[in-house]
Image (tube, rainbow, N blue to C red; front, side, top):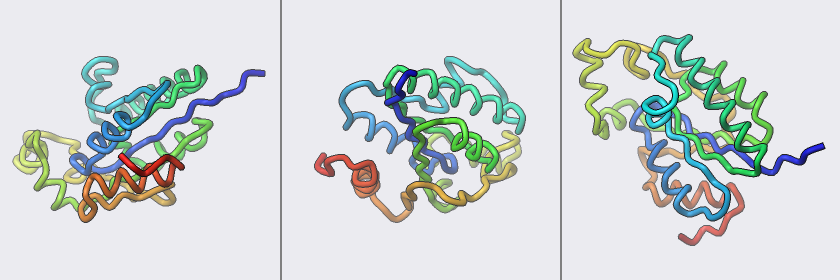
Length: 172
């Protein structure tokens, strides 16, 4: 029987809540077998699905499959994906063996303020439909392993909190 050593660290939250920033910072602080899967990068290069609920579910399902594949080969995977629906996260917890869920929790106002892509503005103007947090829901997380309150914590404070939770040296 194979022994699975890899793990998945999954960042979820509203668009512009800090998922990618923290995932990249964590990735940069790790050595060894580690891979970063960013939702935007996956959508651009691997899975080109839309933003209807069933398409979002399929996208997360594929990322989950990729995590399990990499984990089987002793690779730690860091994922940054909105993952807006409870059922998505429930399936992640059920189907990824060594899974850690981190909620990058920020108010919608803070996310709109940070929005470098202008997606919230476009959604409010009706140019984008199914925008999480505007005209598509983001279900609150019931029991994440860790919450980073990214609207009040600095990114360095959040990273230190994550590293401490993961049992890593907290010095950068």
